[in-house]
Image (tube, rainbow, N blue to C red):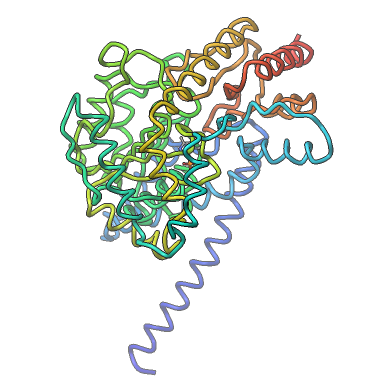
Length: 470
Ligand code: PMP
């Protein structure tokens, strides 16, 4: 056998051996996952992961192996463990599916778990849908979106900010996506590489973590607490950054807490991101649903676009502001080079967003400013009712500044929100268990729906709570 053949044979043997070891490692990770679940422990243990990272770094020095490759490999292994250990976690989506199945059997359910406005889209949507056919919108189109809409969105965004800063966005800064969810997926998947790390501040909408796991990207979670008003400290963020860290995700007003961040803290986070050359993915889907204190009296808090940081990606949507969840349309705002990268995967996976829906969106931004205001007022009023009702029944929470949720716990020790949500569902009320948003088993999220059903739901919640824990 020639030398090369011999080496190839060895490489094959080593690779197969590594796959077998991976199987053994995955089986053990599963066993650890079962043990953690029965002990009520969290899946990710950052301290243990750090300890292992230190050992790997030390070993790399001893055996003279490139550290960054080894750490990326370690991240892939850690991700596999998180994946096998996260199976079976209850999220707002799994509760929603269970609730739907019950409804199909004829049970009446009050949906306090879904994040969906229950009112109609603006009337201009109806008119625009009628026009689509005659105007001939129904062809394949550019992956980044139709020019009129991209221009329209750039202009609309410039207009929103002109009082504070000249953004000068143009169509090259905009990519139309089928919902903010897909924009988030594209940003994480195309801007980062397997083994890179992303910082997610929890509690968080689960998709950031899931997208990262799906793409082999390691998630560093920053746990925030009710006691610290769901605000991360800058030290927590700095401590989570290492040479593989490439992105930090922000989502304010936040799902599930409804919180925004104080301006100074946001300034420091942005400063840190710049110093470490991180992408900032800012998911601003709830930007219009804001009722808390602003940086300028009566106005919304400082927005990421005003920092004019070239590595930021802002995701926005028609889903909440215009109550158009089922239309599946949103967009990303970023530098053209970033949009270019994201659009390649969109072209590959979708060709383009439905042209008729893009036409509808264009008509909406031209005509529906008042509709957004009205929707925001409706949601704000409902949030107030939810806050009052939650106070009345003794729930513990930080008052939301916006979005459409309340993230609360009860006064009861050892309260398990996942078990409680299952029980509550039997009584016809669906809520979102906190474990879907991170390590928050004692919390649950309630959506601010219309007053009558919200109040009815809260009475049932209170009754079941007292029956179960008093
Ligand atoms: N981001 C956050 C924080 C959300 O809560 C949601 C939906 N619940 C989305 C993005 C997805 O929005 P879209 O319908 O635009 O995909």
